[in-house]
Image (cartoon, rainbow, N blue to C red; front, top):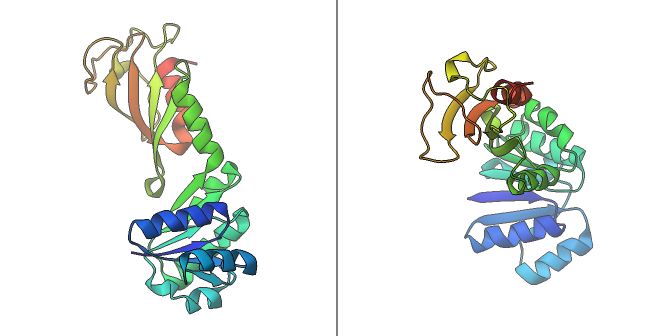
Length: 220
């Protein structure tokens, strides 16, 4: 697989090494001559000095044959522009952008970036997994479909304890996939399944409906 990485900073450098170790053909684009020299001295001719936001530069490095394009500079705007040029000018099938500001995620998706990675969100998700009382935990984001897989905990004070699934007002596009009780085996929910305190509900919903889903499963 031919992968182009924009940004040869610390993140780009370690990503480059990992991808090379996995046997991929990888090229890093970096504007800073010193960084390019450091990478080239250590890893060989895998760094090209240039601006990854410029269509001419991307054409020079054969972006049209790239399978994946990853922008990991420290500037959200640069990452967005680079991914857009790769996607719309060179028809790269898969683009990934690093985000410094997680609030930009929706805009990036709207403008055609396939996957966004936010360090802030990754840390928050790790915290959520470590805090047993946290009501909603992100498990997976399906960027291209605009869907998220979440784990909602039903606590003793939840208004939905004792309610059947058929009586819940789930937001449009949301489905319950699995219920993991405090005791017993996991099971797929049926319409007459009753929620109990201690249940963990694995559900699929849209990114915009997370809060509505939480309210439907736990109460306002």
